[in-house]
Figure 1 (cartoon, rainbow, N blue to C red):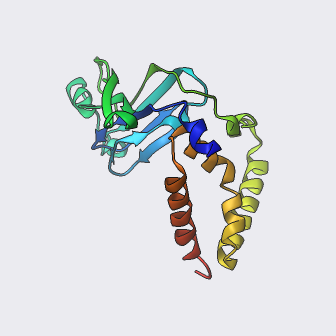
Figure 2: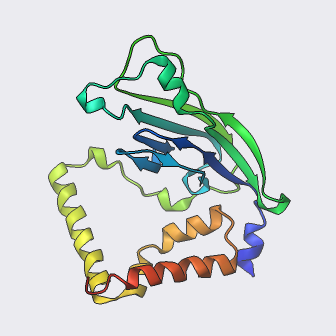
Length: 210
């Protein structure tokens, strides 16, 4: 009951609509929302869980020419066509899932051909509360690479062992904080939360002994 009352504070979801047919990466506040460096990506995606604090948000899109490694390049016209019908939107679940476009995302004109291109836009999202699970986040690019590699491998091995042994509840504890942010920011009600967790447990259970 407390969970449901708490989530009544916000009945607006934020999303990004896209259908990008070239290799690309989409980030919101420097967090990867969607990425495919071989083909392309199709949305929409809800992005509330990437809006760490209320106020200004930053979305970045980087695209690669499908043959950029062989010298392929975008001209300005080709670049303009990539982001057709790409925009930030709000969604109102309590109002028939009404959608309002906040910002259309378009690449600027360029003078010279390029093999890849990145651009960023800002928009305002008045999320009801900040996401606390990022409070102790670290910039991994500033860590010693050998130390980082060792810590990543050890964590990977620990998680792999949990899946191999079938310790699903223990593995789910690793996701508890991030899932709590997902449920809260996306206004998941009790039944949907339980369904999401049940689907995860079913998926991870298949990894036992694999």
